[in-house]
Amino acid sequence: MTLSPSIAVIGAGYVGLIQAVGLSKQDHNVVCIDVSEERVAQLQKGVPPIYEDGLEDLLSEVIAAGRISFSLDIKEAETCSTFFVAVGTPTDEKTGNANLSYLYSAIEDIAKVAAKDAIVVVKSTVPIGTCERLQIRLDELVPEKKLAVVSNPEFLREGRAIRDFFHPERVVLGGNNADALAKVREIYGVFETANVPFVVSDWFSSETIKYAANAFLAMKVTFINEIANLTQTVGGDIETVSQGIGLDSRIGEQFLRVGPGYGGSCFPKDTLALATMARRHGVQQQILEAVIAVNDNRRYMILRRVEDILGQDLRGCKVAVLGIAFKANTDDIRDSSAISIIHTLLDEGVIVRAYDPMAKYENNDHKYAQSASVEDAMKDADLTLIVTEWDEFKTFDYNKQLSSVQQAKILDLRLSLKARQDELSDWDLNFIGINSENS
Image (cartoon, rainbow, N blue to C red; front, side, top):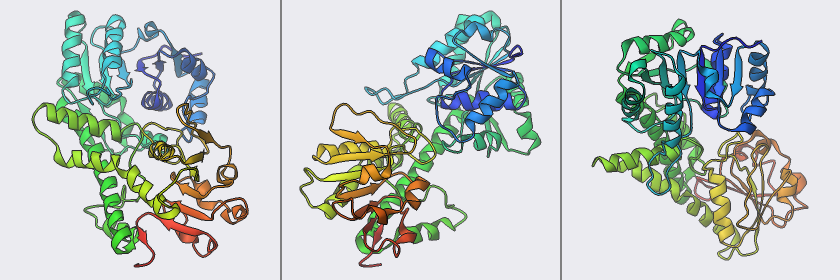
């Protein structure tokens, strides 16, 4: 039997579902509201609509305990004193701004059912100044209810989201209502007990922290890829360079791994939204705009490497692409570098066969095939391109594929096979950021 919920989570996507299940595990009674009938039906059966390590077991546990329910009807949240809003804020392709239509729709639905003094906690990543505007909107809609808006950005990493929820590096809260801030902080009381740092601020600072954090991490990813271009050209080993840089405690080793460029649901969207908003206010973020430009051009640098290996005319060449998800341990393909690379190759007349252990990608515009295994993807290939750092690709027995490929050539964008070069001596191994002739 599910208890009457005291917390509502609006949106059962990646952030919302992790938030709902995580709070339920911490003994809160939660109702999760979503507009998708298919998604809600799945969740009611204990089947998460996304892949995240540990999520399915945790979801089954809190459902069995009766501490969570899923519904299409916002009226199911009438008993809730706190509403966590975790709806999508996708990029508006025409303007580059965040599309806030889903957020405002959720706010208006909450206004209809929320009791007096309820708290609306914004988990969605929103442009700076949004929470203030949401507060104004709620005050216009239901002034008598005195609803309070609190900013509470998420810092989940896909593939490690469960761990990140239960072991956060910090909790950021922003608002202008001290009582509301204190009540949200109380919901996260277990983190207080665990001595997790709390950053409590105004709305604007809280919203900026989220964007600035993602922009800085995107900059680190892009910076090491730029240095990889240098080592590839003049000589050296980018992995060694990354290690040497990362051992500096002022810099740190995270996000200094060479690769095909950043992707996913956050970095591309948030960097563009921040840059667009800054231009609108006349404070252009020149470093950030350079980061975006360099990352967008990464696919063409990779294309040139493919041409170096196979020749300038790629028409009819067969390339196996290993990895579709934007990173390992997730099925998320949003703004995946792999898909960008696939389209770039297809535009050059390349025949592409791709494989990923979890991610699926439908492409109706070009001749493209998604394979069921590494072996199937590599059959008759002129080149194998490793794009996503799945463990399966690191440990696969490539030597067994020598007789099935057209050419024994691999371009490894993740340095997955660097430690296996002696074992794979019959292959022509190529690595991003390593100039074997000069290093």
